[in-house]
Image 1 (cartoon, rainbow, N blue to C red):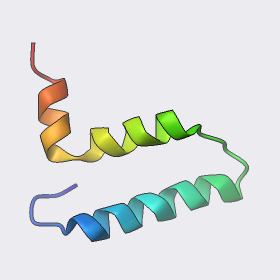
Image 2: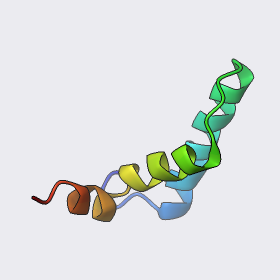
Image 3: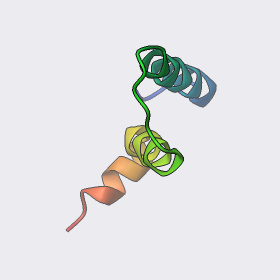
Image 4: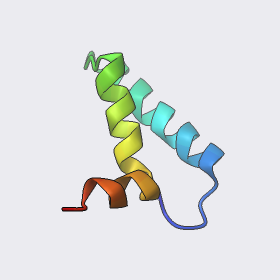
Length: 51
């Protein structure tokens, strides 16, 4: 997510991405979808890189 991007827009793009994967029969379980979303958020991403 780019700084200044609305959270709502980010979620919408993420859902569109997941729907695209479903259309080509790629299945991602709910837990993995959650982790993918969290890793795209700036705050969570910066936490995950800390030593």
